[in-house]
Image (cartoon, rainbow, N blue to C red):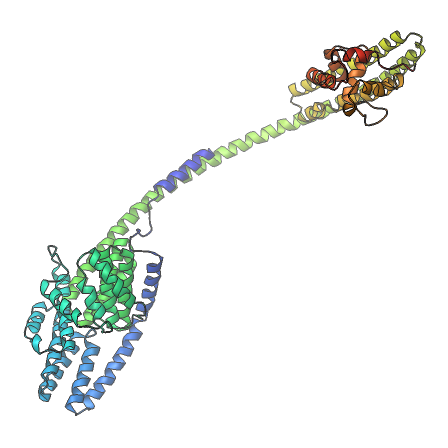
Amino acid sequence: MPRLILSIIGITLLFMPAVQAQTSVYLNDENRSLLVALDSLLRRAPEIDFHKEASIATLRSKYHKTADLETKYWLANSLYDEYAAYDSDSAMTYIDRAAVLADKLGRDDLKTDMELNRAYILSATGMLTEADRCLSRLDEEKMSNAQLHKFTDRAIFLASHREQYINNPKATSAYPARVDSLIKDAMRNIRPDDPYYGWFMGWGHLKNKEEAIKAINVVQPLMESCKFRSRDDALNAWVLSKLYEYAGDMPNKLKYLILSAMADIHASVKEIASLEEVAIILCDAGDFERANDYINYAYNCANHYKSRVRLGRIAGLKEKTLNAIYNHSQRQAEQNRFMLGLLICVVLVLVFAMLFIIKQMRQLARSRHALGRANIELKQRVAELQQTRTELDESNRQLARMYDRAKNDASKLSANNEAKEKYIANIFTICSDYITKLDDFRKNIYRMIVARRFDELRDLTKSPELSNSEIKELYANFDRIFLQIYPDFVSDFNTLLRPEERIEPRSAESLTTELRIYALVRLGLNDSVKIAKFLHISVQTVYNTRQRTRNKAAGPRDAFAEAVTSLGKSSI
């Protein structure tokens, strides 16, 4: 049952549909942080626009109060600059007023400036044909370098808007050959500190990946100290994003689109394109809520700017976003239904699991009751075992008394050394047999207890402590009696060994295992099997010990055992 539950959970995790936003090649940690900053800036946009209106109001007041024609012209020009990307109708009004003032001043160069500005507004509002006618009426031969740069900028602006609005899929370049020629001419006499330098450099390399990478190496350093607060900053960031697009670096493309949008918002620009592109990327990435917020802001900007073409484009984008949100909601509903069904299955499995656990607990209670009865019987058996051990202790005491009497009888038979030695050997054989029988008795009790499942009794009888203590006592008695009979055995035995191999017992009344084996040999017990049985060690141990000791012999190894049998003089 636990395995079944784990399997259900595993299947749930395996088939659980993803509800998070889709991953995108554009999004990384830096871009996510920039999006958060962009969200914060959008909330401050009304405050920024308020300051923009205040600045424009100051300029208008000065314009209406000024009578000097030239001063009035430059104030009209300044008002155009403020309105150029903020309000197209107002910008066109001040272009007309400035053009009239330039005519009164007799300044054809100033009239040319206003026509260049007029081309910008016509392009921005989607009046592409009129913008093209406006530029074609101008004589490039009569323009200054600054005006030629502005003329090139307006040609680029017209080409970019034509690409956005017409969206010709068969186009092989970002702009026509005429614009490319203008950009090349402009780059021949423009300085790196000119505001148009980065803009022209970027547009001049929007051809392929290799060209884009060359331009990035020039334009990107120009943006490192940029604060992204002006219209020029926004344009430079936008063209850098296009270069990264050509280079295949999508995260940096999104990064500079975001920075371009932030610069537009800081400058109160309503002719805003970067935010639209950011919204499209986020919509494709599944961030529908943020994409919708950006599209709504861009729509309000286009409405404020009175750009009819851009309003249509944004409306189509908004419809696409709403469709994507609707489809996402449908998928989310399907996912929720799937998860609900899966949750019901898990709940049913858990109910069956609970019933199974209740059944198992009842069986466990019955088992505990049976175990309690078994414990009572076990305690009774333990009491019987302790009674058996008491009787065994009494038998040991009787055996000890028999052993003492046998030892006294052996002392009385000191007239015949050979008979005495055999008698002593027999006594120890009897003691050894007794220990063996005692161990067998313990093992029989253990088997009986195991058969009746008495765990505590099994643990009690499983220990060989009884036989081990009897064996130790046997060794101690044997060592003591043997050394009483043959007090010089150890020193005599060492004479058979090389000086460096001689054996020193731990005490004067005990023997080592090696000495004990040869003590039995001295008593006439030369069979390794019988020696092993007497000492309760393995035959292999006896054999290895005897072999190792013979290798220490000072004399011939073959005669070592025979020499041992003649060692020592009995003290009895």
